[in-house]
Amino acid sequence: MKLKVSANLVFCMEDRGIGVRELAGRVPCSPGTISKLCNGLQMSTTERIAKAIERELRVKDEALFVMASTFRVPGEEAARGTDAA
Image 1 (cartoon, rainbow, N blue to C red):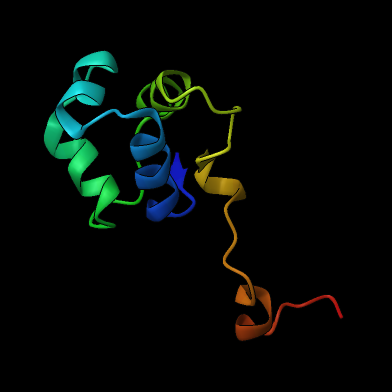
Image 2 (image 1 turned 90 degrees about the vertical axis):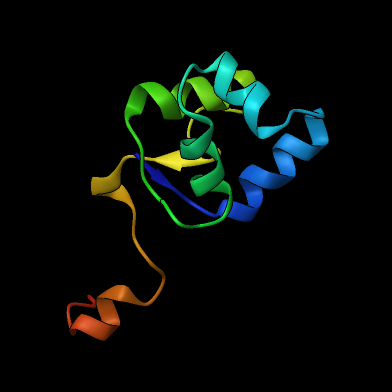
């Protein structure tokens, strides 16, 4: 699944008072995975990890992650010349 915006993940973690290692332990996954997601060095992960992160941070499904096949960058269609306008 694709992370929408890494800053939103960081905000949710800070808001809940959950650090990288604690979230990684709850998910469970590598602290490196969480760190990379937070820093924008990795923008996708497995559905299992994405859903677990959202659950542990108590956010709605797909608040932080979306299925990679449905993720669209604003203006992407226009740049490719496939905009339906």
